[in-house]
Length: 301
Image (cartoon, rainbow, N blue to C red):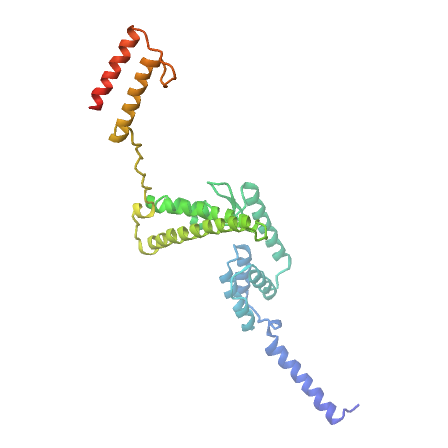
């Protein structure tokens, strides 16, 4: 059976394309014949801790596919499995060697989990919060580590950070209060809304002031003056009430009124003036009142 020229030409093109694809596009299926020494090195690699870089170097000596080597050159779990699989095929080793390696890794993880807390979740030694990783080789979460660092800073910076935390909480409370107000624009709601907005504005200004001094300390090492950040409230001077002794005119008025009352007691036996006189009889009480009247008259002079 003979093929027509156009079919014959297409057949040869297909065969040529398949040959080129086998040699250049998929060269990983054509493994190089490795020596016994290289095969022993691969076996030793499987029996050791299976270092990624060492396995990649061995794989470069086994296959011609440079593109695949370049794609799996970054160390991670997927590329580690890929390097092990390709080395196993190049050396003609059984598949169970990779499965045995998986079982060993599972045993290691299970032994670590049974001995204590897993590596991916550990508790902060200060607050007990679960954290993913220990930052900076420290056994504290991010917040506790920051607060431990703050304790080494000057007291004025520590007070600034404490007040900033309280201000943020107060501002959130005011925001919730503002969103909970009724939408009606009556006088009561508008007054309440105006009061809340004024408090939020004051807190925002205070936060901006404290944050500026905190950044100056962190960036430039400038320690602010405590009296500037936390000024002491001026105590108002006590208001002294003016007494009759301080006011001469009022003092004379009081003395005259007392003298009149004493005289009424002598004439009417009452502090108020009555219609009919009722003189006080002679006795110690009358003598005492007369002495008081004479004392008052001396003060009036």
